[in-house]
Image 1 (cartoon, helix red, strand yellow):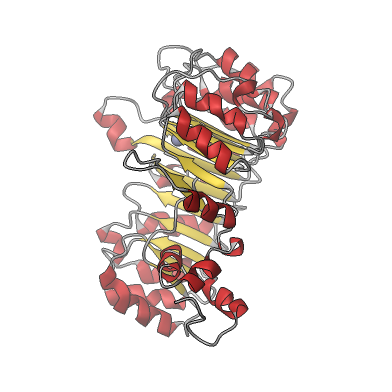
Image 2 (cartoon, rainbow, N blue to C red):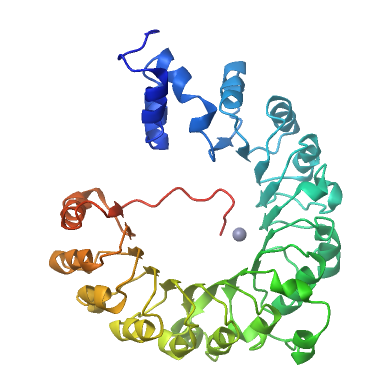
Length: 429
Ligand SMILES: [Zn+2]
């Protein structure tokens, strides 16, 4: 079919297509050539990332590349380490600004210099050791986001790593996970902040060096950390308090967002005969500007709840054994909370769900599982007058009746999501 299937103008069809999900866009463009041309307009593909696997069964043809150019694709995940695939990509899409390199080796990374406009670079799961230095990209000053996750470095030392990243002096976001650098987290944070003046977000995996002394107070009093004030977001993964200092947050007093993902719950620590320390109370006391807090596993909430800064408006509690008493204590600190994410919400607490609108009456966004919540209790969430977004974390197709009832009770003001939104291509772990 080469003529308009219905008497609507192309502009109107394009407007309709803007409301489609990604999978519906692919279905629509398969209908006819007319829809295909309209759907492939670049305005409908902003923020879309193409995943390129370069299958051995057959190379991508010229039409494939011209479709990507028509969509003005600027972001790609590349799952090939073959040099000829990288050269083809550089020839066909030379203006890519975001590149995610999966299962790379040195020869594929050597091809990055063919791309002149890289702003965001993610290197994940390297197959072989790679050399990290300024020459990895053509314009080191263009790079604003660098993510290295599970990458083998030819020189896995702090000194070598810091001298390499210091060339990327415009970085605003740095992610370093599982790089094999055997260094204390506090020393790494200090070194990174000392060389990257514009850094706003830092994510580190914690190295467990249980048999050497944790750096003392001198580190936290040392000079040259004017940059610490610009860092507003810190993420620590695989955290164990045994490897960290109680003074850690004194390095980053201006933090607005903190995410701590513990390696174990306190019960799991005791099962391993490790003493369950809790620095979290002190850390939170040292962060007067915090607005976003996320905690995964770790100590029981009652050990730190009284120190959560009252400035927090966005809270994630993915902790074991969360009780309704914990939520009551949290609400006493944060009665004006806007965003709440709880998971799991255990069976003994599910019946307490109607209490959530009373504890946090101003919530705009809520994420929680529904498994242990009876229907009548779940529907009580409609009493949250300001709620605009509800994400059911253990959603299933059988939930549609429940979500319809809930939406009807809110006069269809509430958006209910039962399947997770698309993962950010830059995030990992
Ligand atoms: Zn990672």
